Length: 210
Image (cartoon, rainbow, N blue to C red):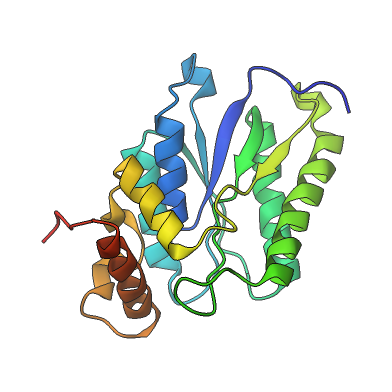
């Protein structure tokens, strides 16, 4: 591959989760050199019972941090093949708009609090990101981009490490999709609310939202 274009935009794949808020905040901490290089938010939520909550949360994250937003139609994400296809589509949307990289802000949930994620699953995710980036790079030169990267900065972090990063960046946790119904709800929203508020409080977080 040739040298990577030196003036590309950043893109972030958003599903409404905590990693997405952190990725948006990271982009906002590095202002673009021109409006044309404004960071790009690719909203790609799974087509499940939470798709509306996820889409609204992802849109709020992009708006809060002034990212240009592109909404993809909700897609199946129940199998590894589904996730690969969603990631691939998001990357092609990013390249078409001048991005040279896409942050995939997923974080693998550990089997137990404080434990490291499953190493086999971690390796699959890293390989998926690497290979999708290489595949998209084959088709990116017509867009003036010689090399495209898929970055996975949070994939191997524990819950505590991700919470500490959220604290460092002072991200608005209430922008996560599970926030609105999680405090009093059951099911997946309630589970994620309890999971994240517990570990966030352990690292010194205190909610400012009633």
